[in-house]
View 1 (cartoon, rainbow, N blue to C red):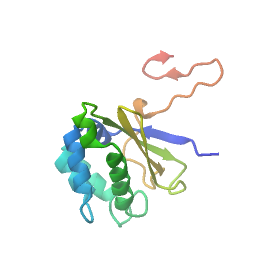
View 2: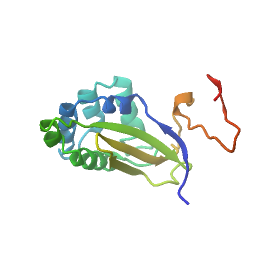
View 3: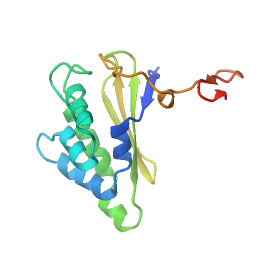
Length: 168
């Protein structure tokens, strides 16, 4: 049986990727074609992420030093983005007035390192859904999960009580 997600999140970096224009996505795809792409720098230049977010990518995702995954994930993320963005036919769709967007998520399963790092995507017609599937970070994010990052589970006929909205 596949693992169930511990959480699914759409952090500030993925939200900026979601909001990127066709031109920006095309530029990101071109940047990723370079040998040894610096994804943190590409995100800073093309998406306008903060210096702190750029450093987070370097420290926790794209380094051979001890990080969340115990290894450098640059090649996997770069290859996944190239495949997903390449499959979008960015130029052809834009010319035909069918510009697509991306809808990105980070899904954590299992505990530190148990789940293989996977980059998944699916074309839903008007958007490319991208899911980065990982194990739970060895050093979890330095902040508590927010209500909008939690999957609520309904079992039987008793709805869960949401901390902000009360009974659903």
